[in-house]
Length: 120
Image 1: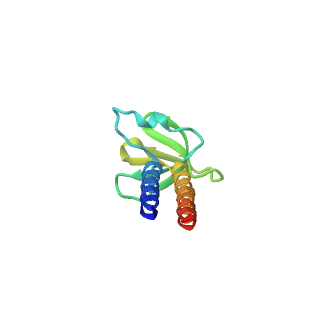
Image 2: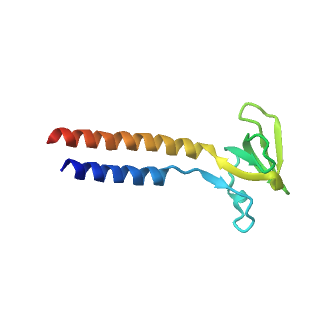
Image 3: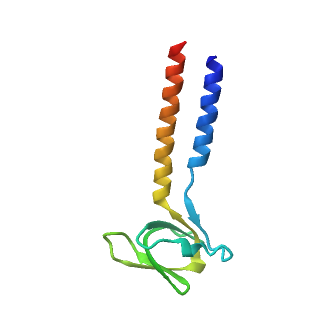
């Protein structure tokens, strides 16, 4: 009985972790037109093709072939990045939510396993 509960809970945990550990990633694939999905006023982490450091930016809009934003919510330094130099754009807020959900789910599954092992 214990092995059955443990097996079920580990499968449930694995399924939950796999389904929730994801970020929203935008790329320069023009067939998908992913840059149109960026929302003004949200923080994104931009990875460059040339290997330079990743940049956090508060997205404002797209002007021609450039992604325009500011360095942060309190820092109004303008940031202009050419689309041709962008390897990927990630929404970091969704990653934090997924990590939190994974921790809460793992704690819930652990509570179920512990309570079922004490019931026998």
